[in-house]
Image (tube, rainbow, N blue to C red; front, side, top):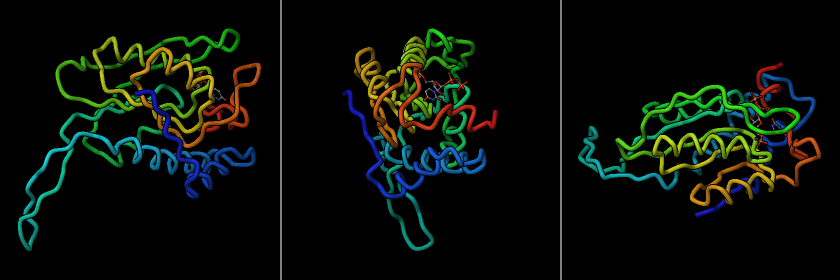
Length: 209
Ligand code: PRP
Ligand code: URA
């Protein structure tokens, strides 16, 4: 599959990216812009979910609509992924939530795993939406995907707000079956692993730390 869907050409996406990136945006406005962008990325990422026809009786007559035919799981990568999970639950209150806790070692940039709460996905038809606003080296995303696959997850999409090309390449090399949905593919990583132009540290800006 190996596809990256970038939404930046949409004016609402670009407008909100400007707010998100600006060093003058405070935590509250940062959170609000992140939530709006997550909504737009999530709508795009859920377009291909499996559906089944259901009959509905309106006050006027019977009709049919297509309703979801699989379990949807949102899996935020702690901490910054928490910025995205409430948006998912607002759009789809019946979704389930799993958790992966990872942070990047500041020196080595290697992901350090500290928490996991995931089910056995082999038991039912499912789609997993891995949520992390930043894809930099790709180490954290690949570690999180490894954890999902160890639980027999097969349908995995990665939702981010900003990606570096280096991270996309890493994910596609290690997990060619995973599609990436993002607001923006940025230019590059700098020599300490931050995305350029990026937005700085997403977790710190979202949580005001
Ligand atoms: C950030 C971000 C990703 C990771 C991306 O998390 O939310 O998880 O960095 O970098 P990578 O692609 O090079 O692995 P961070 O390690 O800052 O942890 P935090 O969310 O707890 O702040
Ligand atoms: N994590 C972030 O929060 N920002 C970056 O630019 C890279 C990794």
